[in-house]
Length: 93
Image 1 (cartoon, rainbow, N blue to C red):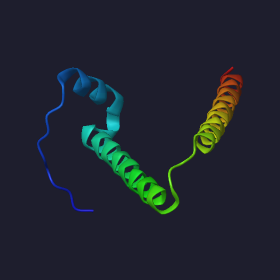
Image 2: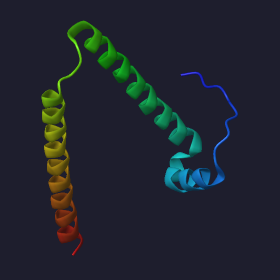
Image 3: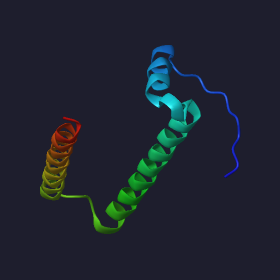
């Protein structure tokens, strides 16, 4: 993929945090990944808007059910991470 150099302005404190989090992959890779995620989010919003135009707004009940399912998924991910962490500690010991 071709790349192009651009100039952006970022609050200094945020830039310091991003640089420390980006580590070896670098600031450009970090920012590129963040922009890709934002673009995916924007496109998902476009899809939701289109679906609501076609089928009407999401009901309160459907939204609450979806959020509850996301909470269950997050909890399962947390359980799996905890199991991996325990297994890694057992291997290291």
